[in-house]
Amino acid sequence: MHVMIIGSGGREHALAWKISQSPRAERIFVVPGNAGTDIEGENVALPMDDFGKLIAFARDQQVGLTIVGPEAPLAAGLVDAMEDAGLRVFGPRKNAAELESSKVFCKNLLRSADVPTAEYQAFSDPEEALNFLRSREDVPVVVKADGLAAGKGVVVCSRRQQALEAVEQIARQKIFGVAGDRLVIEERLDGQEASVLAITDGQTILTLPPAQDHKPAHDGDTGPNTGGMGAYCPAPLVTSEMLHWIEEHVLVPTVHTLKRSRRPFRGVLYAGLMITKQGPKVLEYNVRFGDPECQPLLMRLKSDLLEVLEAVVEGRLERIGGLEWDPRPAVCVVMASEGYPGDYVKGHPIRGLEDTESLPDVKVFHAGTAVRDDRVVTAGGRVLDVTALGETLAQAKFNAYRAVKCVRWPGAWCRKDISDKALQN
Ligand code: AMP
Ligand code: GLY
Image (cartoon, rainbow, N blue to C red; front, side, top):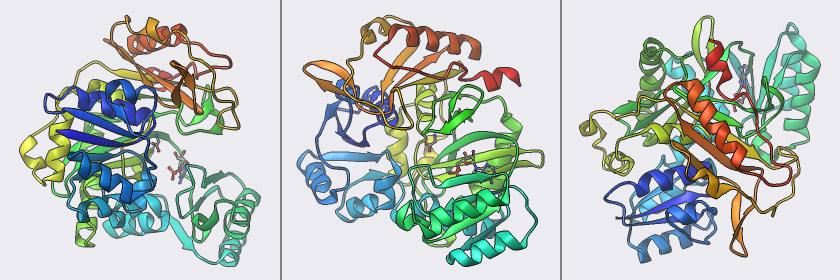
């Protein structure tokens, strides 16, 4: 079968790598891809937002399955356009992807499904939001732009003044554009965060082992927020008992409520959870594999991913039974460009990648890389996702950082404490 993967990050490299192991995969196209995906498959230089060209390419190349990596094309309706053109594609349609593209929709759905989440109010009038904040006690709140804002539309506030400023910037100054047309103001929750992802065809739910991301730039969860500086899996914070509870009280009611609302969900449902003293509560939903959580997850997956994703598209996930996992934990360390998540320079040649190839149980997934004059160069903020398995989490961490040491370019940096949160528990 010919498979097309949409996206260009570490998640898409991991997807291409895993799909390439399926005996059924013949050709793998990655649109637009990076230097790593071009090794697992073939990069195709098409814009992700030109649905007409993507559909024409898929038809020409007889693509049997398309997998959409990032949220933007899902929110823009790529799955709808491809399905309506008679093509098979893994990912939710636009009306189900609203779970991620509209925080107001997500919160209202959580409330109607009776899924535990922070108390909230939604606003479309900035004045009302400001009055709401002024009229209540000065307690910690979180202000969220309704729409997609590349992970930056959430402001966690300790004091009222910060919240008032956040409303001013998001809803009045529109620093995230139309994403700020509506707002959610919600109670700030305390606890540790975990990511629980599930693959679903809208009927059957296959829950993946829990993972943990590291969003702040620096060690000890300090510094500005990023797209994610590392992840590991499984996260012992979420016990198997808790995982069952999350399935029953979070994932199942969400999928059922979407179905009842005539927005059947097919794809990856990713619950971003806060594990509070009262139990797990949903912070947000994503409608795709998490990046970087996908990398350690797929490193541990033993089942044939292509078979599983095809079963979702054909609505027969029930017959897959379950997924098979490597019992060993996996740790993924993101290596980033100097200056990220702020401005950074691209185009530095990356050295030492070949030295990582002989290391056992290590895979270096590419994120922001490109090929220039036959050399792999940096081409983004998050550059490489160095991922390793180990007998224990500590060993997986050791293996990942040993590989990190092999790779260099001017200004390369990474967090040094990926997975330490688990080791402290
Ligand atoms: P979201 O995009 O909604 O996941 O928010 C991004 C990040 O903001 C989360 O990963 C949390 O670290 C933080 N966050 C979001 N909502 C809350 C909340 N209600 N309480 C505390 N932190 C939150
Ligand atoms: N790892 C967080 C995300 O993919 O949004």
